Image (tube, rainbow, N blue to C red; front, side):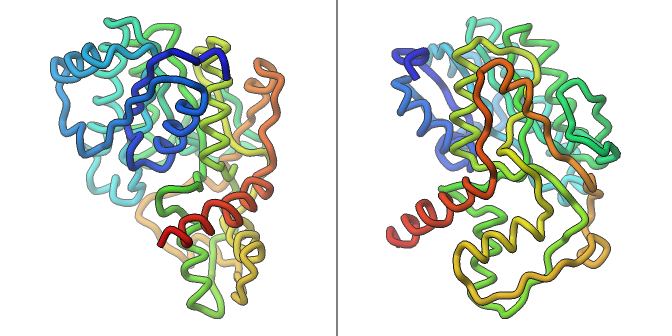
Length: 295
């Protein structure tokens, strides 16, 4: 991706985060000088500390892939969720504006309540059902208000990919040990492969995109369908059974439908995200095999 060659990027969450690692890999491949920062290195960065750190790095682009993602725990720890999902991005947006660095910030499908019967567009009105979604929506609004029109907010969902445990990874681990698994079938969303999300984000960046965009792999699935497809691809002898959300009680309410409409991305880039099932095969056959071979 020649548009990024020679640029400098800082990736918050780039060392250990599921999405951050994929971003770091994609940026390096694109010829971008990349500094990956882990969540542990961040601590409770105040504005001055953050400003000094970024001034020293002098990035052209900053990617924020750090978030409080414990959806159920957030109901009992709202202050922590809002600190990481709103306050930190707000400080980051102010600093980036001051050093004239572009900011790319990631958000979630959980800003929606699931009441729509068609895929959500970036223009649809958010109405989060839980603290996690509320904190992420607050973070979106903060970075857009404080960072200016060049800030890019990317909403995505149901992430799976190499480098860190995720839903698909957990399902396959369980399927190797059990004869059957019960997986929720009354929640529908957009599974997203993190290397594809990273590559498509960079497509937006090189075109100077700002505002809110939705990015996910093409198609939709329930958690049960995603699990069943992963188990089938891996060739495991485990029966995946559909259960309701009521049979798997959770502290936080989830949207029943949160499929994301990515047509704005396609209109700008001319590129269509590939189907999630195709990306899932790459994850199972390439990434997980590589991780198992590495021990």
